[in-house]
Structure formats: C-alpha cells, structure tokens
Length: 189
Length: 338
Image (cartoon, rainbow over all chains, first blue to last red; front, top):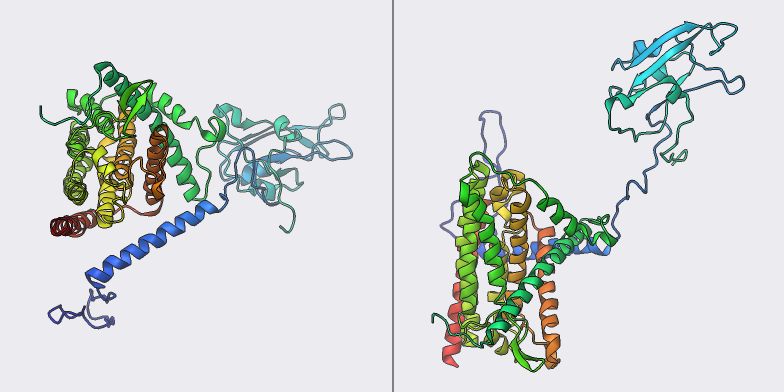
C-alpha cells in the first residue's frame, strides 16, 4: 500500500511560538481498499448501534400523564401563608419582597389592621398583593427578603394561560390551597 | 409501437387495474409514513407519534388533513405556472413508475386472466429510469420556480446528484439484464426461479441500493432537502397541498425503489427454498419483501449522517460508477464464455 512517490507527510509539529500556522499531523491515509473496507465496517457498526436501540425500551416520560417529580427546593409558583392556629395572614404588607424583586413584578398596597377587621398578625396587612407571573423570573429573592416567611416558592410550574391578564395572581389566588399538579421528589432521592 | 407489451388484457381490465394500483399506492404511502415515524422513534429511543388514534396510527391522516386544509400560498418571486406544475410532475412520475412493479404473474381472477401489474412492457427498467429522469424536473422546476436562493441551491444539488447516481443505477441493472436476457420485469423475476439475483449480482445489488437512496433523495443523500443548511431545499417555499404532493411523491418513490429492488434482485413474487405458493399469495410476498427493503431505507436514515457534497460526488463517480461498470463487464464476459 505504500507508494514511494507519495508526498512525505510532515513530522509531528510542535508549536514553538514563532509561526502563526503549523502543520497538523493526521493519521496515515488508509488507501482506497482499506478505506472502503473501513467505511463498510463502520457503517455496519452504526447500523448495529441503532438496531440495538430498537430492542431497548424507549426512555421517554409521557409528559402530561407522567411527570418528573420536582426537588424540594424547586422554585415554582409562589404561595402566601397563614398562621395555622389563628388563621391570620403572615404577610404584614412591608413591601420588602417588592423591593427585592429584580423583575419588579410584585405590587403591594398595605392597610392598617383595625380591631374590627384583623387580617394579619402585625400592625398592618397587605390590602393588595399581586404577582405578575408573566414577568416573574422565579429567582426566589422575595422568599429570602420576607421577614415573616409569608411568601415561599411552591412547586407548580404548569403556569401557561391564554391571556396575559390571567397571569396576574392576586392575594386570594396565592393564599388559596394550591392544586398540587406536580409530584414532589422524596427527600434524599 | 415503441415497446412490445408482454400481455394485454381487455380495455376495461386495464382501467380497473389502473384504479386499483393507484388506490393501493395511495394506501401504502400513509403506512410507510407512520411506519417511518414510529421506527425512527424506536431507533432513537422514543415512541414516535402515539397520540392520534390507537398507537398513533391515524397520525398520517391528521398530517394530510392539516396540510390539505392550509392556505395555498405562493411567494411573490415564484414563477407562476411552473410553481404549480412542479409538485404535480413529481407525483405523476412517482405513480407512473409504480405501475410497472409486478405483484404477480398472469392470474385467473373469476375466469379472466389478469396480469398483477400495471403494464408489462419489454423495456421494464428503462421505463422506470425514464420516469425517474422526468421526476427530477419536479424537483428542479420546483426549486427554480420558487424564486428563493435556498430552493435553487437545493434544486441544483438535486440535479447534480440525480445525474450522477442515475448512471450507476442503470449500470448496476445491466448485469441483471444480461443474466436474465430480458428487459421485461416479469421475465426478470422468472429468470430468478433458480437463484435470486442478489447472490450472483451482489455488487450490482449494493450499487443499486446505494444509488436508490440517492435517487429518492433520502438520508444519507438528502442534500437536496438538507433541513439544517437549506431549510428544506427545493420544498422550502411549498406549503399545504403542494408540499403534501412532494411528500407523497418522496415516499412513493421509496416504494418504487423498494419494489424495483424486490423485483430485480429479491426474486419478486418467488418464495425462497423452492416453495410454490398459490397464485393469490404472490402480491403479499412482493409486499413483504418491499416492506423489508423499506425498513432498510428507514434503518439507514436513522443511522447515517448526511454526506458532504464533495463526498457525495466522490462516492458516485469514483466509487459506485467504476464498481457498476466492472460488475456489468464481468457479468458480460461470464455470460459470453458460458
């Protein structure tokens, strides 16, 4: 297969830093016969590889029916919380979440608690609490900023809707017991 | 008369046969479509379409309905009549080529002898190549008439590719024709009663198959479409029913090539090991063999990446053409010496 007239290949090039371009050594030319044989063998190997996939079970999660469980720290749709014993809202309307929000998607309007109308445990409460989920980037800064753990990130991520206005979640929606549509991964899994 | 026709029936049988063959071709294409998508899925470790109908069996129906109900649009730069005509050429030639695939010899159906093929002309393979050459106009004109750079590039590639591979494909068949001593496809099948031509004409078979992949513009030779670089090639500007026509023609061409491989190399309706089946089984034998070849098409598509353009040309002119020529030459010498 060796041809004496064939041009000599350059020796292994080592970059000394003097030139910009250097010759790169390639593997020797297999020649026509070996090359043809090799392409046949490699094609057959490729065909074998794909055929083996047919024998296997497809590794597919049929999404709307089957879901990948999320991790406990997954940051999904927000939740607002109440105290379990008194039923009062934890949010005191301090607007720290709105201040921390980099996407500027939280709107809080606070009002004073009165003895007749007691909504939260503090002096004031959030009269309006809206999160525009079409702007939210799910960074979780609101959760960190909150001094009363009133807002946390939930696990829901199926949040698509037909209108942008439907994605502005009000306080009632955030306080409501969420329909858990997402399986949770067990601890340590 | 240009060509001698092997067996001629009454005119009404001819018409009936034409309708039946067209109906069968129309049914086979969606089956190949869904089979390809399901198999490609399996080859890639997924299920493929499984939402429409049981196991996704109605997916092609949904696809076709969707395409046919779409708006018939035309780019501003397109060249009027040709843009409309090109997909029709593609579909017409594909169906016409299908007419020649023999599904069995002359059978007695309710006392009437009927040949189970569209027509048995004595120019068999030449007829197919003639329509293959016209089919290329469908792609070429389609790409050119679109008035788009990508379409034009795809059409140009298609032109070069089809010209290169048609030569090898025809030469690969020369060996078979010399051995069989006839150009009639039924005659070629009958000449294989001793041994299928895959064995003595193995290199012809290989060249024909590879050239067949190229002729049908399928992976790894789908440079005319090349969705990654040419965003669809010649069919970029086509949508709705016109795109459906191209799609239909592509899969029908796969079936034609599969039928031709079956007929010419795999013994047509003959069973292996000298089994003599009753006449009504013949079409099913052909269909099973065609299914096997079509599976090979899909398997190769799932495996091999697209060739570069220069690799395509090198394989065609430096690989397949000399091999096919040598095959024809050696076969001719052997036949003469005998």
